[in-house]
Length: 216
Image (tube, rainbow, N blue to C red):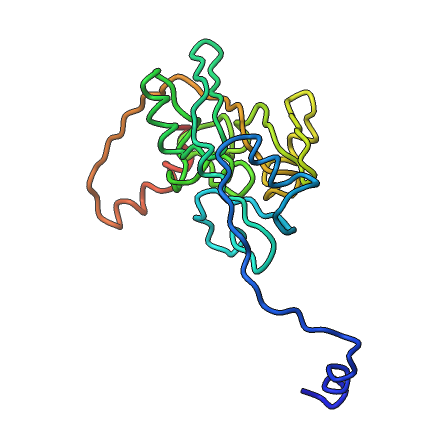
């Protein structure tokens, strides 16, 4: 440490914040969630929402403030096979939603990684897109509307009529509020077949050019 830095530390003009750990709360109902974020909240700011906690970075942890664990919001509220939509709470796991949709002859568009992720986390955080689909690049593109609680405890609903705001909610990492419910576009189960053939590396290299021009 330099002489100047040491002098500043001893001057009393600056204070070193003691290291702390964030409080973790797990609300299970909307009134509890609003109380966490409201003006009379007993919890310290800043607030950081968390789903399954499967992120490869530390975006679901905090050194101070409050982490809001949304995994208790785990209800599938409605699956509508006529309008091809599913209304779910933010803490529903993608794998559980996929199983429930299959019972109605429906599926999420394409395939998605980390089926243990929560719907809210997949909307607000990065998520890879479909492997076999043409109707959406990311999980978040299937969102038709979301309900959030803002940082001051107010309720906010965003739908397709508010296109710019809905786009901002997607991949927002909770900066616009805590997502607690979403309506997703789903589709009838798509069937496909796979064929395979054994070949050598040289045989494959000769077929690459023609395969690249094939419209699959």
